[in-house]
Each structure stands twice: as structure tokens, then as C-alpha cells.
Image (spheres, one colour):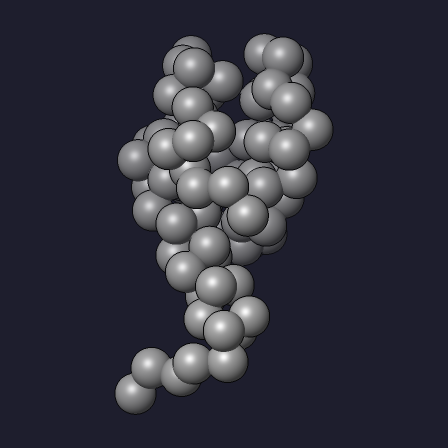
Length: 78
């Protein structure tokens, strides 16, 4: 999965009004011309979490990416 930085979220969410939930973020990004890869990554955000900034979205995506990478490598963190 691509990292939040590589997806250039700031560009796609530049004028996003916060707070916003996942579906609002995905829909806004799509309206701004985000690629399907970006929209699919945003769909991995927690559904009921309210985001207050692009920075929070970046952190959540990077955390999801880290969890995904750990699962694939079979490593556990204690």
C-alpha cells in the first residue's frame, strides 16, 4: 500500500472542511480528481472516526499501512 506522503493528500484535500468522516473525505478527494488508488487508500480509514485535519488522516493512513506491513511480514510487536 502506498504511504500517505506518496499519495499527496494535501493536494486532494486542500480545501476540505473539517471535521469530516471517512466517506466525506473519500467523496471530497474524488471530486478533486484523486486517483482510484488514493480513494481506495482513504477507504481504509476507520469508518466512524472523525478527522480534524489532513495531518490526522495522514497519521491514520500511515498507521494502517504499518499494521498492514506487520501482518504481511508475520511479525508481531509486543
